[in-house]
Image 1 (cartoon, helix red, strand yellow):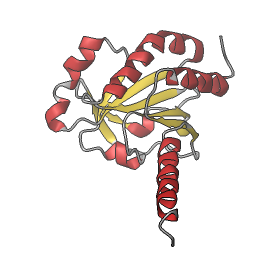
Image 2 (spheres, one colour):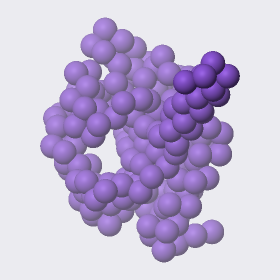
Image 3 (cartoon, one colour):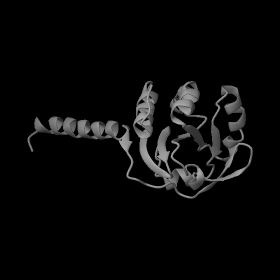
Image 4 (cartoon, rainbow, N blue to C red):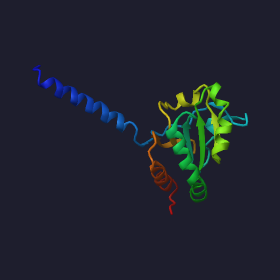
Length: 176
């Protein structure tokens, strides 16, 4: 290969790698995966089976997050602002799943209280639920109906909550 083509080939490879990384963060329809059965605890210490989070037609938004993740906090704060509307208009509920390890999980209840998040919070300290759903990065959000994942999104940018609301409208056939 001639020397002038090497930089061009390198640039092309970097562009392809960058494009695929960006595309991997976009919203995608789910492949009809059902919620796995994993036992987690909520912040009060009650054991919850994840397969029972969505057993009706009411949409459930499951958001994986961590206390150290700034985009996660921005996303869940945006959900907080829309939660009452989503609950009223679409019958939706939000479940925030913390992936903080056992040491940091002790901080979660105070962290939640300080932000007044109104939704259910589960602790996935061993990251079993995260692994079962193949979550690689946080934040990662799933939209679930009748135990089946119908949509998912990785990462967060301001306005992503509007995309989620559009999915809620489609899923429920309702809209404002």
